[in-house]
Structures are given as structure tokens and as C-alpha cells.
Image (cartoon, rainbow over all chains, first blue to last red; front, side):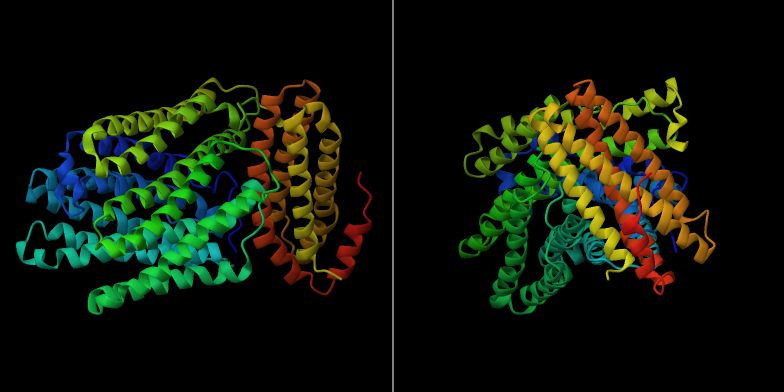
Length: 426
Length: 146
């Protein structure tokens, strides 16, 4: 029995999640800059190099960084297990992923096979190290809740998405592999987004939403089955889209139905929460479910337009994932800092609400939402794309600033060593 | 008769609801929140004591684990007591920012704590104390808060 979830010696060092959280906005800023430098017409196609490079700065550089960082922290709390050599593994894999992603972006953009080869090695070792160690931890879990199921299933999809991604990157080195590119890319993207990110978000939300907002729990049946249904529909979608394309819309409808239902239930639970306070995280959560609902509907409607608007679907679904992640960052970063400082015995420390300036958080939110809506608009009229790219960059710079201010509080308190208050131990 | 796990888990839910009510009152005016703060603080203190003075002792006696999970839960109770006390001081000082900063922190700390208890400690307790469960629940029910 592991029973050391949050005792300070056993919790992962605060640097494990923070390392990932501090790097993620940098990649989003990079994505924004790449967007500024790209030709708008090239972005009309999801298979153009510019589109691929920008997408992966966000999906690997931002989304997977946030997910991996969060898993190091969530495993002890939500599953009661800790990762093997968490400090060493996160340090090494973070480094490999940072350079792997950068090399991939440069390798693709400037057509440099050597960088692409290095990227394959680094991304493979970074992702696999984390995935294997997390799996080893999950194997020790005694009490398998729907959230733990969500984590495991999400990791299985992560594993396959990464494998497919590595193959795709290889196809830019070896032209023989290029003929399979579009087929694999299709499954790679849908599995990564709905399987890896989507399932993890659904699984974690089951536990986190009732916790943080005293919201009604999701129905037992829903909690137990929805991840299975989503997984089945993802597998079914892959099979049909590979072999029976005419029927793939059925699997797609099924998948969309579950995610759209999740968005609707999520909003309804938020509405019925007992804790009526409203904060930036909640604002982001609401926004994310609107993006998810719109994205799901758009994806199905787009079926009648032969995927002409798939880029818009991607922006909307991307908006869903980014919103929920940024919203979570605003809560988890201040808490982790408070928790670690408090655990060291410091008592006169700022409360969670004093670590990030609310005004800046709101400005960041407004710019973020405006830029995403701007991207959708730019798909049809691209005259203002640079403006929206700029708004996106600024919102990510502010996000970075907001996280850094909180981390600086941690550093400052540790350095100045205020009073020790031992009354808690009396 | 409910099991130890059910009884204490339900009490968590009750405390959560009192917490939400207190915050709701406080968002209107801190003066208004005094009464619901007392109510929440009292319910939470009672919950802590039911564990510390009854259930943990039975658990420790039965399993011989005195340095394990229960000692960690006691430590977290102390952390939460300190936050709750500071919240009361923030109400007295009419410092709303301080109050909500503390309540937010308490909320997350409390939820992580509850989750560990409900998923691990209560399950263990229920297994080890299944024969004594009705008696333990009775004792907690009739306990007088010190």
C-alpha cells in the first residue's frame, strides 16, 4: 500500500511539474511566431509543412508538456502511486522533448534530414521514458477508479500516437515511406487529440470538477463506460477509415456524440455546482466546453464538405484542449507553490489568490479567446491573420509571465525564510 | 447501519456543502459569513476528532500502524486547522481577499486529503475493522467534541 501521495518527502519535487509548465508557453509563443512568418495560403491545407510545424509546436510543445507535467503530480494524488526516479526521469525526458521538438520544427521547415533523425531519437526517448515509467506506476495502483482508467487508456493512445508520429517524421527522411503518409497522419492526429488528450481530460475531469467546485458527480454509469465507448469508437474509426471509408462517418458520429455529450454534461455540472465562486479557471472551463461542442458539430458537418473545413475543426478542438489546460494551470501552479512552501514549515506565505494577478489572467484570457476566434475567421478572410497571431503571442507571453511570477514567489520565500510557525504541529 | 467508509465519506460531503455555503455568504459580505463560518468550522472539527479520537485509534490498535497513514492524516488535519483559524481571523479583520485566498487553498488541500482518505485509508479501515464497524460508527456518532 502506497500511502504517501502528498507527504512532502514523497510528493514529486516541485521542479518536476514546473519544468514542463514553464516551457509550455514558450512553445506556444514559438507557434505564434511561426504563424506570423507563414504564408496564409499554406495554412489552408493541414498537410502543408507550415501547418504541420505550427500544429506540433502546440501539440507536442504545449499540450503534451502540460499533460506529462501534470501526470507526475496527479499520479500520487489521484492514483496513490509514485513514479520511479521521478526527478531524474522528468529532467532527462524534458530535455529530450525540448530538443526533439525544436529539431523536428527546424528539420521539417528547412528540410534537414539530419535534424529530423535526431528529432526521432530524442522524441522517442523522451516520450517512451515517461510513458513507461507512468505505466510502471499505474501497475501498482490498488484502487482502479475511472480516473485511473482514463489515465491508462490515454497513455495507450499516447503510445500509438507517438509511434505513428515517429513514422511520419521518418517519412520525411525516407521518401519510400511517404506514400503512407496521409493515411497514417489521419489516425495519428485523431488518436493523439481524442485518445491521448481527450480521454485524459475526460478521466481527470470526473474527479477534479466535483472536487474543486463541489459540483455534482458524473453518473457512475457514465464514468464507467464513456472511456470504453470513446476508445471503441476511436478504434472503429481507424478501421473504417482505412478499409471501409464510406462507413467511417458512423464511427465519427459516435465519437462526436460522446465528446459533445461530455461538453454538455460538463457545462451542466458547472451550472449546478454548489460552490458559487467564479474564477479564471471556471471561465476557461466554460470556454473549453463551448469550443468542444462547436468543434464536434463542425467536424460532422464538415463531412458534407469533404473535410474542406478541417482546419477550422482543428482550431476549435485545439481551443478546447488549450483552454482546459490553461485554466488548470491557473489553479494548480499557485496550489503547488503554496503546498510545497507550507510543507517546509513556512506559514506567512501568500495565499493562492495572491500569487497570480487576476487582472493579468483576465487580459490573457481575453486575448487568447479573441485570437482563436480570429484564426477561425482568418481561414476565410486572411487579411488580419498577423494581427490575430500577434494577439496569440501576447496572450502566451502573459501566460508565461503569470506562471513565472508565481514561481518567483516560491523562490523568494525560500530565500528569505520567513517565520517558522510550528503551531500546526502542536 | 452504514460502514465506516460510508459514514465518514458522507460527512466529507456534508462539510463540503457547508464550505460552499460559507463561501457563498462571504461573497455577499464577510459579516454575513460569520455564522456559516462557525458552522463549517464546527462540522470540520467534529470530523477531525471523530477520526483522531475514535477511528484512527481503533485502526492503529488493530493494525499496529501508528506511524503510517494515520500520522500523515493527523499532520494534514493540523495544516487545515491552521487555515481555518486564519480564515476566522480574516473575517474578524474584514479582509475579503485574504479570506478567499485562504478558502481557495483550504478547498484544494481538503479535497486532496479527502480523496486519500476515501480511496485508501477508509477502505483499509473498513477491511481491518469490518467486525467492529457498527461499534466504531456508533462511537463516532455519539462522540462529544472537545
